[in-house]
Structure formats: C-alpha cells, structure tokens
Length: 189
Image (cartoon, rainbow, N blue to C red; front, side):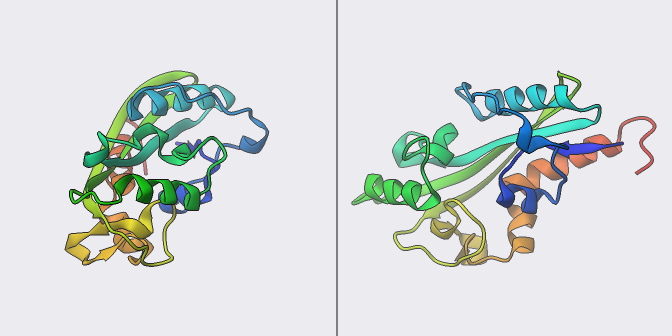
C-alpha cells in the first residue's frame, strides 16, 4: 500500500515521518475555505488524491485558545495574515493575550484520508496545554515555544521530537490513521 502526505510544510513532514506526493511542488494548492479543521483537511486530501493512485492524507491543525473563543483555530498558520511567519503569528497571539489570565489552549489536528478524489475517513487528535508569556525552546515550529505542556513541565519547543510525537495532536491522529490502515483487508504491513 502506498501512502502519501499532502503537505509542503517541512515541520509536518518531519513529525509525520511521511513521503510527500510525487511532484507536489508543481501542484497548485487548493484554497482552504473550510470553517473547521475537518472541512479543510477533507478539502486538501480529496483534492491532492486526484494527482496520484496511492492513498493520500492531509491534515489541518492549529491552536485553539479558550480566551480567544477558539482562535486562531483554522487560521493558525495565517493568523497575522496570508504571508505571516511563525514570529508574526506568535507576536499577534501575545498581543491578544496581554493581560489575560486564562491561558488554556489545545492543539487540534484532523487528518483526512482519501483515494482518487474520494474521502475515506478522518482522524482527530487533541492535546491540552496553556500559553506562556515568553518563548522557550527551539524545537518544533509554529506556536510550540509558547505551548506549555504540564505533564512534561516544558513547552513543545523544549520537548524532543519523540516526546512531542508521543502525546501531540498530530501523533494521536497519525496513530489512529495507521491503525485503521493496518486493519484494512489485505494489508500486509
């Protein structure tokens, strides 16, 4: 069984330990118009799966902060604008949380699995934490240096990739997808 990941994000490819779709760089990306992580993941997976014969998975993931009504949510990668960097997004997050005591947050990931333009199913993972004022650590990407995970007593930016993967939203969703694929009839892997 051939399985491809539909992302150009090197951080996600590293965390997923996955191969991108062949010639992914030459495929025009779809517009993400969904209002939920599920809708965006399904849009991407079904779109990209039309370009290959193998199974394709795509995720939509992000940070949901309770005090911000779930923002940045589906706009996590472009919170500060369409061409925003991680630093831009983190700066805006800190501005919006200035003086806010409730810093509870969660990372959410939804993986959609598709084959030849048709959705097969989705998988969801979430991990709870809180946002701290100052970044800590240089591992990970995105909001990781600000996302404090109490069981580790550190941020995801300080945790090793292996530690993070064992508990992360992406790790959870990925393990669910792999279990699903392994249970398919005729799967020899």
